[in-house]
Image (cartoon, rainbow, N blue to C red):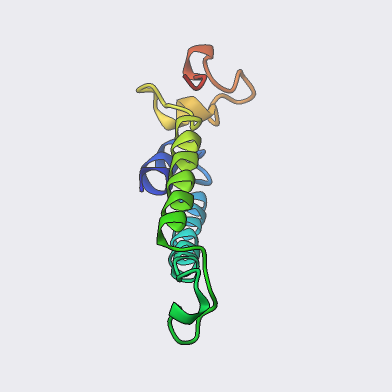
Length: 113
């Protein structure tokens, strides 16, 4: 949730913030839909005789949860790659009011730990 709601509000340039925030929120909701339906199909039993009516055999609940855990850790890794504002105003960080000067102070850029 913080990757699709809190972080986008801080890292996008002020001029594009609302548009990019909407795109980020939509991507999060699309991921939730794909994850929900994907889990529903993947979690079906491996034995075709025990599968719910209308579904094909899946990989089982245990394997589906392992895939879900891997996706969660991947998302956590990408969250740590997002830049941090370090208490600097967004306009100052983006450098959009500088009229051609340096875009952002050198101390405002972070490297993932």
